[in-house]
Length: 274
Image (cartoon, rainbow, N blue to C red; front, side, top):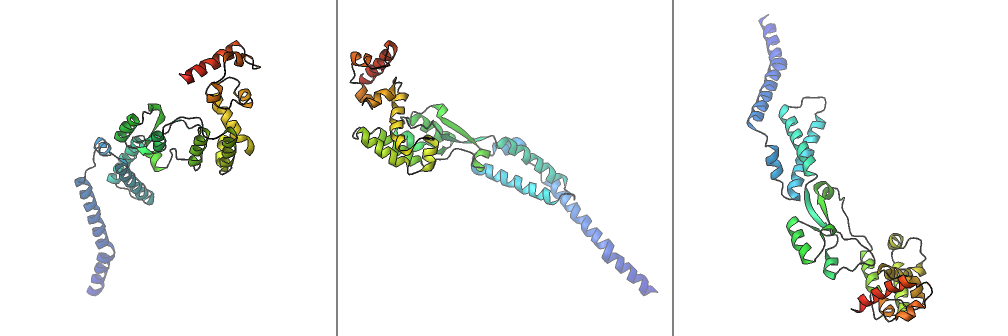
């Protein structure tokens, strides 16, 4: 009889009491640990993020907590973990909008007149201090720069250099090359444009390959404000240097040039000569 009673006691101890005690002490230790380990304040965490690497660490910790809570779904989530997750969630909401980089991104057009130094900095990302120095060094405008926040950087949601950027620059150099004749320019521009379909699609959509060079050169005159640029181009006045040789009496005899257009063209010519 004693043997049976002791067997029952041992069975209860092994399968009920001991596991309960183990679970109790584990829970107690966790509770003590969380009492000792206090959470940092929101302001302390935010002020500790000074660069993109700091931001990445905070994002990594937030993702870890989110995964942990997701795995513990419908089970016990201790108060400490939940508070820490809430803290980092609030922190990331603000950090996502914090500016970490500045990107030089002036308006890109085939008629632009940026310096070589300015071109070297297009699309590049800089810290705030670098941005302040470079902006002054290359004499760029403030509105030619865009701000890149943490979220933009992590998910690559900022401007990147197009695949045809080198073709774009060559196109401009050919257009401005005074050693080439108009016919040579048109031929080289047409051949260059054929090298990249995206270049043609983005900048000369709807134009035939043989029209691209001529269209571009005429557009250059239009962008200078020259009236009836296409008509002057067809007459052989294909650049500003040739147009500048026109006299007032010659201009007035060209069909379409009344008093206002003649005055406008003379003003452009005089400005070019001065």
